[in-house]
Length: 196
Image (cartoon, rainbow, N blue to C red; front, side):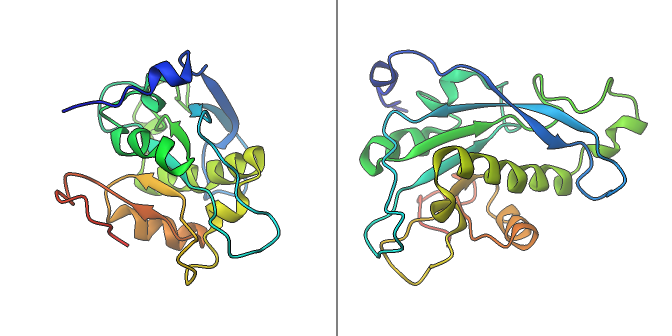
């Protein structure tokens, strides 16, 4: 597999950033505990779209989620087998590429240890809620709320926030966050066809 030579364009690996407002339990209103979740951003090719509500082509943002392979680092958003589709398309589409470390992977651990009681927060529902919460943070940071909401899906010039998770998981995320996501997985979509 040929990996794109985007690392040179990015000049250096993006630094590790921390999203420190991730909730330990998204579904217990009495639990206000938060934890830090690592992420990386490649905004080398990012071209923000119009903010005036026009129908001009809007920008694209890709979100790759860890938990499917080796631990993530800054290389994931510049040259990566894990997020290769996003990395390869970023310069062509003027896209933002963001990678979020999955809870309980790498250094993004919401509890003190991995005891059985603490693993109750390791679930697909919590992980998907992490994505919905993190999307709000990235949208605000990059002025990309319109891109990431995909509220006007009938306009062909509008591209959605894309996410690298198993395609069936996108339905849960859509339901939880009222946001349309385009999801892709080469294991479930070998011809790289658009799943939306």
